[in-house]
Image (cartoon, rainbow, N blue to C red):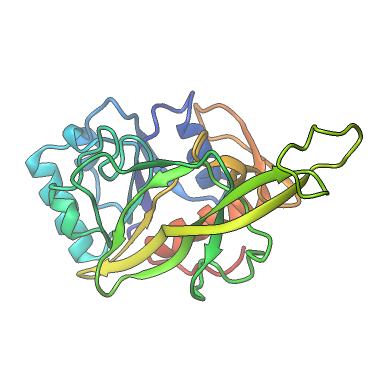
Amino acid sequence: MKNRILYAGDSDLGGAAAYLAGVLTHAGLLFDHVGSEFPLGPLLERAEPALYILSDYPAGNLTDAEFRRIVRDVERGSGLLMIGGWDSFHGAAGDYHDSPLAKVLPVRMQASDDRVNAPQPCLLEKRIDHPILDGLPLAHPPGIGGYNLVRPRPGAEVLLSARHFAVEAGAPDGSKDPTREERLDTEYAFTRGEWAPLLVVGSHGHGRTAAFTSDVAPHWVGGLVDWGPERIRAQAPGAEEIEVGSHYVEFFTRLVRWTMGQDAAPS
């Protein structure tokens, strides 16, 4: 039975990769990790993974044979999850838009830089019900700092979107200068803006596919990393310890379990 995850990217376990590696360890999920600057080759010589996770792992690291292997494994039932970042999707140097995985992932990628940074509030917004999201308090959504801009493929499901808000500060009397008079409390006007796909799921052959277009680690992860009433400490072997929010851990655990074909029920 396939039960191991092949996790590629997010620098190394002493850096950004410590976040997802910590979540996987906390969930009791078995994985092998390769840093963003190293080839997949040695890990692909092992048994077929239950799930491939590519997160800030540029397409230029993969050979044609490795791309064919991933596509074949997904068609046979392995999962494929891509997580956003500067070296994911197209990004600054991801360049997956014209790779063999472009037809496997549940999103259509741009042929140019797709990075969107959010200096004002950008909140998770639930689009439809799904086992990955069941019971998560999305009526009180966390914010993110950015994402890769993609479009869902026909037949794919958009579970979450990133909703932008424009915020303007003003004084209670309606003036635009909140510092004009002393001791006046600043008031804020929030204007609902555009949205973009954030979590998209689908399938290819017998395998499940998913695209989460923001990051699992700072800086794009934003407030999502602290989402939840409890603090969770976790540490993967060889990695730095992380301390994150309980809903953050639950969300990424469910996303991983669902994409690898397991039950995504609340833990």
